[in-house]
Image (tube, rainbow, N blue to C red; front, side, top):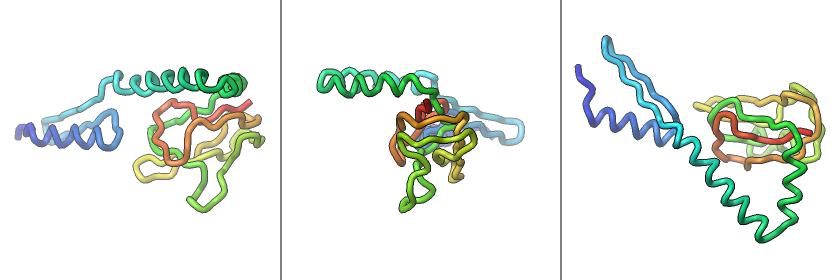
Length: 148
């Protein structure tokens, strides 16, 4: 059985629509793997400096407030998914800026493939910045918050 072009295009659409970076399928002796180029992943950080450049032009206070936050240790996402600051929409967030956390404390949830993954702090300290908003998609290795 040959893989049909329409079938491959549908797989590519699934890859794109679900923010996946790779799909692999095997059918007996045949196999197919679709991968997104790394360029697609680096396109997101390229957009971030544009926002940062616009912020100092409108307000120097935001630029100076962001500098101390960068001095903390970054807590990064261990997976691609959707960031949630609280266990449910009507619940209080796990952490807030200024709150002290201990190593192992749950600080947020990253939903991936319909699974809610509790993200624990890798170190103790004070939350100085939360870098993503509730419901925002996150990439593997993306900074979620800074802990000082």
